[in-house]
Structure formats: structure tokens, C-alpha cells
Length: 232
Image 1 (tube, one colour):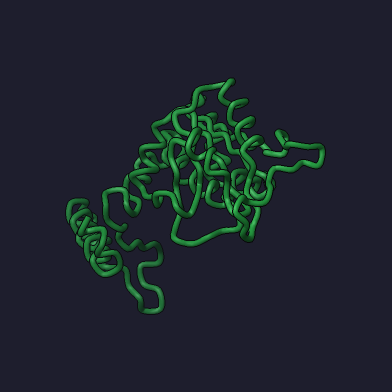
Image 2 (cartoon, rainbow, N blue to C red):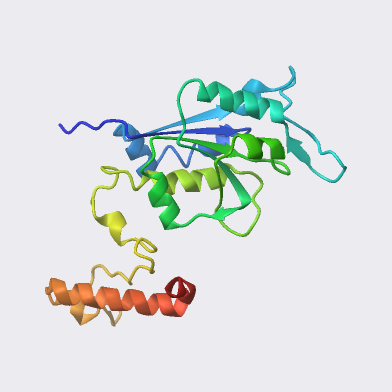
């Protein structure tokens, strides 16, 4: 029996922990945790609420629509967790953060302890961002109801890269964006479906020719769909 050591721990602070239950309890993320390669702990911010009613938000100074997550609960939560371990990064998932890409996921997968803060309402008090947050990440140029789904995306992007998580150790190396271009098209059985045939090169049994074909197809697909990647 092969034994694994816990390689990474990710803590998540949220006001809606239920939103993270399903994404983190199935498929590859469940496998990563059951193997002891990844530990994910979700913390309900209301544990550190400012009153008995569980308040963690308030109106914003200067007026305007929407509530803002308070300094005190977030500061207490972060400091409580920091007393238990040292974090390599304290990440705030926010629409105005740096857009998540494969390079960032790769870099974060090499860390040991990460703390993710999920925003909600109109966001978090700016002072928390200034004094605690070390990295701000967005998953795209759009706004969600809260940071929980973004946090789940980030955990998945990181967790699948940990050694031993995927059944095929080389699988992640050929994902889209891993080498700066999109992945090539893929095919499976049958070789002829309704007259739609698999390219002959993939049936040739010649690994070198197949590798060259896949690379050419990846470049062509990238040029057609994401030429900005080639420019970068």
C-alpha cells in the first residue's frame, strides 16, 4: 500500500460554508483529501461575529447601496488561524484581483499553507486588504454573489496539480495553458462514428508523429481561439 504525506493545507473563511461543501467533497478534490495530499478546512466567519446576532457586515461610510464585511470579524478570524500556522499566502478572491491563470495555479501548488478569504455583499473593508492580504485573485471579469465559487475554482485548480492526486501523473502537464497554449483536440472510440473519423495520424502508432501533430493542432487552435496567448 502506498502512503502519502499531507502536502498542502488550505483554510477558507466564508459566511456561507455550505456553498463549498459539494465542490470540495467529490471527484478529484475528494481523492486529494482522502489520499492525505490536501487538507481543506472551511471556517464560518460568524464564529467571530461582533454580536450575538452573528453580525459580520455593516453599512459603508459615505453612503451607497450594499453592505460591507466588517474589519473586526475578519481580523479576528485571520489572526486566530495565524496563531495555529504560518501562511505562505493570504488570498482574497475578488473581481478586481489579478486574473487567475495556469502559471499562478502552478506557483500556488508549490506552497504549504494557504488562507483564502471569500468576500460577500459589496466586499470587505479595505483595511483588511491593506494589512492582511498578500495576494488578490479574480477568476474572470464578472461579478458573483460571493467569493465561495471563486474559492472552489481556485482550490480545484491548485489541488489537481499536487503530486499523486491525478491517476496519470503526466495528465496535468498536457492541459490547456500549461505550456502557454491551448490543448489539442482529443478523440476516443469508435474510430468511425457516423462517418466522422478519427485522424489517421492518431491510429498510426508512431509516437513522434502523433506528438508533432498534437503540437501543431494546439498551435492552430490557439491561433484561432486565443491569439493573445501567442502574443504573450
